[in-house]
Image (tube, rainbow, N blue to C red; front, side, top):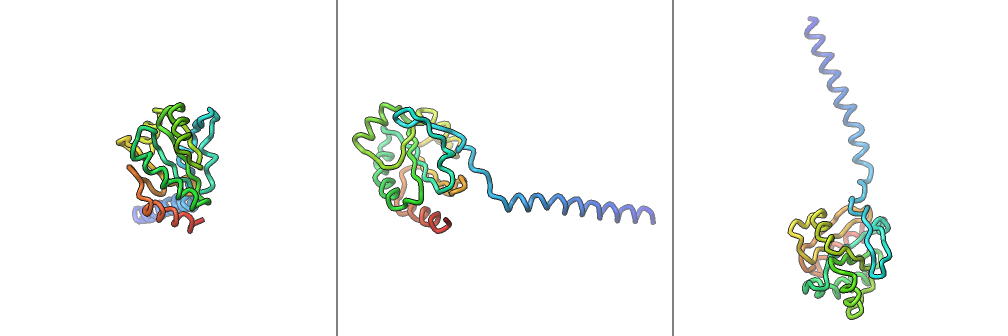
Length: 173
C-alpha cells in the first residue's frame, strides 16, 4: 500500500512540475520575439556616416543586397524604387556588396530615393548568416515591423510577388 501511495504522489508531483514548467513557456510565447540579430549591425553610407540597422525597427523593411557589377541587381532597382514610392509605410534599404567608390558612381547614374548602405565584401558573410547559403546576388529580405524575416527572394525579384508580400505587411500594420 505504501508503494502505491508513493507512486501516486510521485505522479501528481510530476504532473504539477510539468504544468508549472509550461506556464512560463506559454507566457513567453505571448511576448513578441526579439528582432533578428542582424539588426545589431551598422554600415556606412557613401559619405562614411554609420547607420545602425536597429534604427529601421518599428516598421516593415525590405532589405536588398546588391552590387553594381550584378546585372540582375541593376535590372531590379527600378522595380524596387517603384515599390518604395508606392508603399511609404514600408522602409526600403539597399545594402551594397561593393566598394563605396563603385556605389557612389553608380548612384549618380541611377539614383534611388531609398537609403543605400555599404556592406563591402563582408556582405557575402552577412547574407549567408541570414539564410543565403549560396551567397548569390541579388538577395532580398522582407522583415516585419518587429524585425523578423517574413519573406526572402534569392535572385531578381518578381515585382508582383513582392508587392503581394508588401500588401500583407501593410494590412497587418
